[in-house]
Length: 301
Image (cartoon, rainbow, N blue to C red; front, side):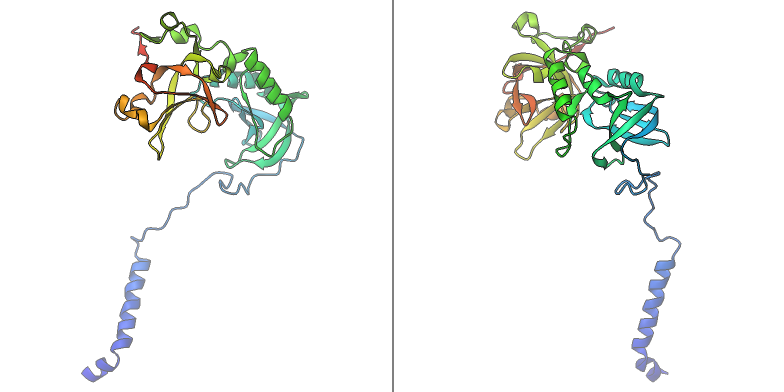
């Protein structure tokens, strides 16, 4: 018997190994990677989206925000050529309400650009109601800004011109007279006021109208970032890269400020004094001294 076992030792070892693998593989405790349900469309490829030919007319069933809505069938459409505020940002309500007035429960004509849909599987279309370019109308009224993919040139000139005119004439929520009185009444300021400095107080998203000028900018820090070079960025309006205004504190000046400065100012309403500069197409102020910034104190009701 011992001789038989010795001669077949290798064969037996193989059989035992196979049995062990089989037990592990078919064990009820084996954890399978779960399948993730993503709805009607494949998030990565959007392969299940039905074709939407150029010039298709569809009924608008719901408005999501100032540049996105749903059409019959439950599919999402993103308006090309513009960008409006999302929920939680200054002009969200006004842009959404105006878009509802223009298109909700109405049939719209959907005109294609260069791309059919974005990475969220939203159709990308220019929108028309009775031959009125809806995106252009929102920009004219100061409720959205011009925003184009590099390859899209259709309507770029007229939408960009409409934004320029809205900026210059300070039209609508985006460019209108900075901070509403009711908004100012929510906070108290000790140092950075018009009376004490002689400088104009503007809203963060109006900073692009004041390049080269020294002003006081008021707004809520919605997003912060510390770079590899240890420079700190405070962003206003929307998180980077869609911010309407930024404050930069360079590494060489950080020692003057509170510890973890990006955490300290995040989600606080502040005023910043300084000269508006342009960096990569966006307005910014370089903060070199803590006296340039003040946190608003909320009034007690």
